[in-house]
Length: 77
Image (cartoon, rainbow, N blue to C red; front, side, top):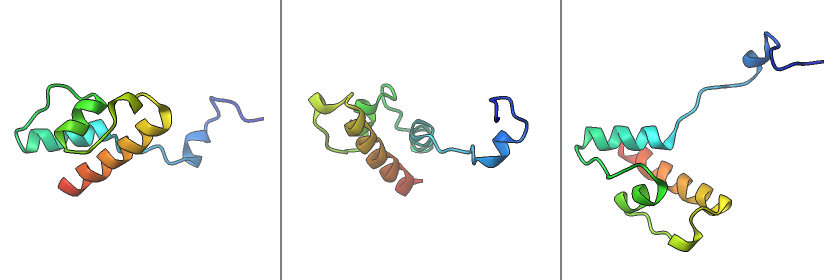
């Protein structure tokens, strides 16, 4: 039985990640253009990514838009 505190558990999975908010922050600081906040809608506006406001906060839509944001920011870094 594998438990949450199993010593080797973390060695079985890649735990590194790239956070879209962190990447957006790096881009903003590097280019001296810091947005008002780092909410999804603000970042989509800031990077010129079109979206439908009433669709925001839907799980799948947010995932799709976050992916678009990630791809856009990644190109700029």
